[in-house]
Amino acid sequence: MELVLKSASEETTLALGSSLGSAASPGDVICLIGELGTGKTVIVRGMARARGHSGPVTSPTFTIINEYVDAGLCHVDAYRLDTGEQLIGAGIDDYLDGEWVCAVEWADRVRPALPSNALSIEIAFGEAENERVITIREEGGWDGRLARIMKELMSE
Ligand SMILES: Nc1ncnc2c1ncn2[C@@H]1O[C@H](COP(=O)(O)OP(=O)(O)OP(=O)(O)O)[C@@H](O)[C@H]1O
Ligand SMILES: [Mg+2]
Image (tube, rainbow, N blue to C red; front, side, top):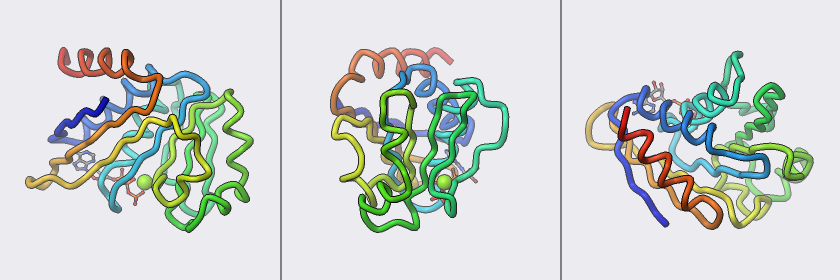
């Protein structure tokens, strides 16, 4: 299943992140793909808040992997990595044990280190300044949940 939506503001993207965070279960991996500044971290921030994390959420560009224990959420930024091997070297397997939800920025750079049935979210700049085009693709296990998320977002 593939869904394409437009977000006209950071708040809308944040709300999508919150819905994803509420719908996610331990063991889920969410791949975030898109240029610098498209809003990958905004999605993860929404996810973290919805899962009960109250502290800051910023891209772990230098530490690569950050954990928000209070949210059961692992936040990866693979911007500085070139291969899946490097993400394995950074310790990703500890978070792929079914106990964590993992959100991975720049997942396309390290894709072989991640499970094949991840949810993929691609964000592109739209025509207007704050517009983003968000393409969501699921590769197993998300079908029903995505339909619920869309209903939730449309009723807001
Ligand atoms: N519709 C929108 N959705 C998300 N962010 C938006 C939107 N419109 C404007 N923005 C702005 O775009 C920026 C997105 O920043 P963010 O850090 O989330 O990007 P990123 O994709 O994580 O970048 P990086 O690759 O550097 O980590 C924020 O400054 C946010 O306010
Ligand atoms: Mg980021």
